[in-house]
Image (cartoon, rainbow, N blue to C red; front, side, top):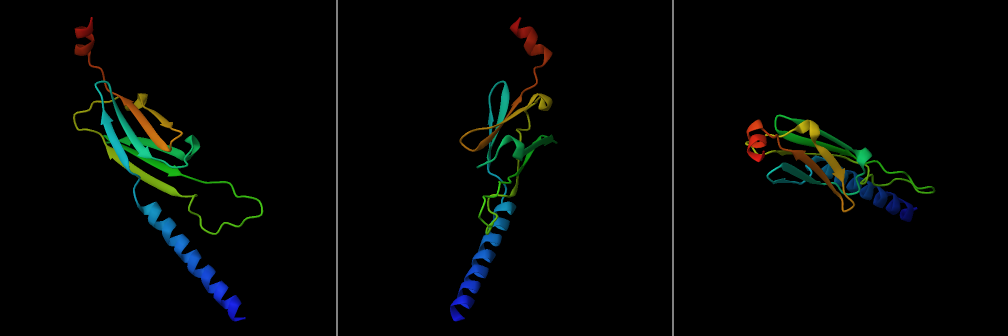
Length: 133
């Protein structure tokens, strides 16, 4: 009987730690880098274990915002104890103030190494086209 109580308390403590850890991870924004070249801005977010279906990207007021809803399949014969892999994670990154971009032409890619790369081409003005002719 005492052993069963101890095991039950141990499970309750571990369940509480797992839930608290998941909540902390969900509240922490995704880390991001903003890189710039002559013709584009590249925003890179950490997106471990994400797939393309997990990702939602939006652009508003010169800010890229992402949401990752990671849901994983259950394994037969196992019960979910700590839902650490099925999370809703968010992050945002402001683009440089002077970057004029074509947000509608942006492309987002989830890489094999666990990053989300958002390539946003810069706007080409008519003066630049005339200079190249």
